[in-house]
Length: 91
Image (spheres, rainbow, N blue to C red):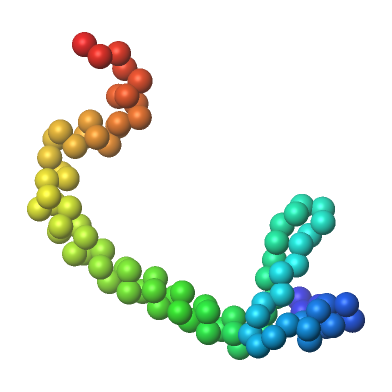
């Protein structure tokens, strides 16, 4: 679906300077949307996906570091259930 810009939206976009996006508010839900040039969106999306890929590349090293730090120790099970254990009365 590719709706066309209304005259009001087109005028608002022309008043912006440079690559600034236009913020739109849905009056029924108060949800804010951002309208920007497709080229700018593609650049932003590429950077975000690049960061995701770089982060995924570190998962192995993160797991190794956690194991070396003792995160697999039996006592860590209590930490994993912290909220549950916090509600129990102290002995």
